[in-house]
Amino acid sequence: MNIYEAIFNRRSVRKYVMEPLDAEILEKIRKMIENTSSLDGASRVEFDIYENLNKKNQVKGLLKSEAPYYLIVYCEDTPSAYRSAGYIAEQAVLYMTTKEIGTCYLGSAKVGPKEKNGLKQFLVIAFGRAEGTLYRDMEEAHRLPLSSLCTYKDEPGEYLKKILKAARMAPSSMNTQPWRFIVYADRLYVFAKKEALPQPKMFTTMRQFDMGIMLCHIMLAAEEFWMNIETVTEEQYAKKNYKNGEYICTIIFHS
Image 1: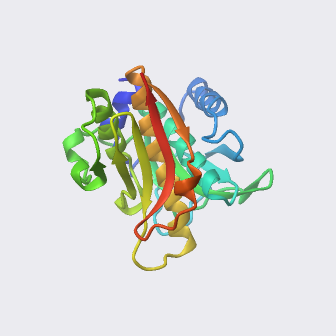
Image 2: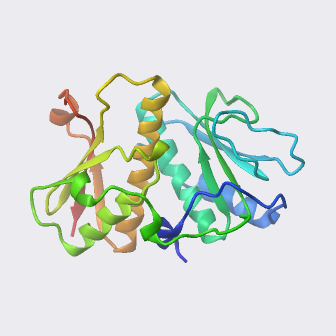
């Protein structure tokens, strides 16, 4: 299984075998994260692997899972940093999936140091060998149909359809699936769906993190099909206040 295929087969793992992973694979995970660029190349995002094999480093929060390891996410308090954090974290999660390592996003959980190099802890990802099933069939995932996520202005080509299918499979906090797309033959206009009522800050920051996860899926799918993409922010859309959505970016596909 490669990292693109993992998009469709990964499942969240809640129960783990409390056994150590090989030092070599832990080092590969660290190196993979270090070599992954942020979305904008400027946002500060850092990660740390926290060991819990002795079960003494208890994770705190409403949604928690005891695991042998946690990947702690630290980032700046900006929308672009939260998106970059999701973008990098999902690549790490999918990489671990290809190595038969289970993972689970713990959005409201905290464990270990609260800060790292001036950045506050934002999110924790449990990981380790799964106790039980690691993979699932794509059909088991509860996701909105593309007809609910996309407004089609042109008929997309075959590869763009596959990229949208990969975007659709992105996990999100409480399975909110906030992404919405306006689809042209050579580009996507990406929006984050707004809730009708004002939301606490944790919900709005998690929405940005989720958008980063989804953008990671688009990038990985485009790479799989050898498509060149360019991500831009168009000021005429960024300055507008949309009632039902927030403009995130425009993704242009070059042949």
